[in-house]
Length: 265
Image 1: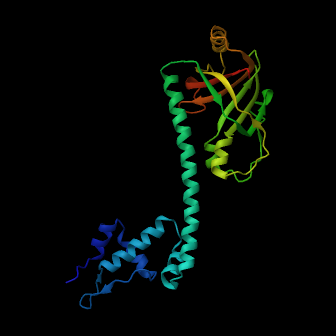
Image 2 (image 1 turned 135 degrees about the vertical axis):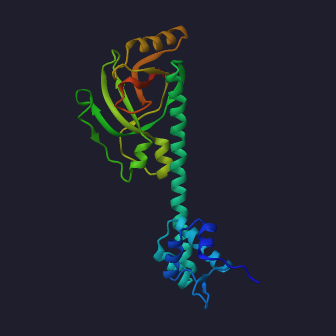
Image 3 (image 1 turned 30 degrees about the horizontal axis):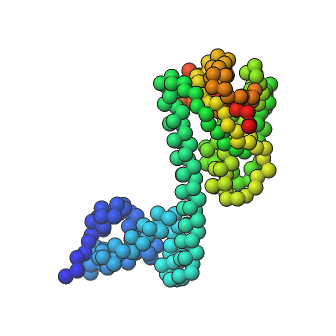
């Protein structure tokens, strides 16, 4: 005899509420038999498979109306069209998550030595980046100008960084909010953006603490001393990538990764 289940057993088996199971029956997407003696619903393996189809489509965030259409019209092309659409959305989401993981890895690599006060000097590349937001020195906190990148969402802004440019005396010249060109390429493909670009360059780099959001000149002197000791020619091109271990308003835990540009050979 074929095994059957009560609505309570089905809901527990599939992790659904009883009301959810009843909802799909009312929508004519689930078709249990009815016990003629007590009018209770009887669910068999076929009904469980119906619910598994529904769970799959709901997991893809396909609207109930489209699910109903697929199940009742049995239109293979429409089903394929919806699945292809969801595949594209999934691919985009995976690309975004991959870039987010890169940023999280970067933050972990930077924040740990900052907390441990391990201010090691390294040679590294500053990646080519698009400017999303920009402000000038006298307007650094108020004069931010939004640059236009069509189609950027708040998720893409999560992948961005606060960058500040300084002169040789560490006077702040400019503040940017940037996003790496590679990230844009991964998320949007080969689309060309007209935004201002900070070009890639090789630099001496060090993570240092900020005092009330101010960069101490002693750290720049340390970088220049390292360059002199190792016969590395540098330019007076200085930018920082600001990092907050807690929140931007927490002035006690602010750090910056300094980039002192190495002269091109």
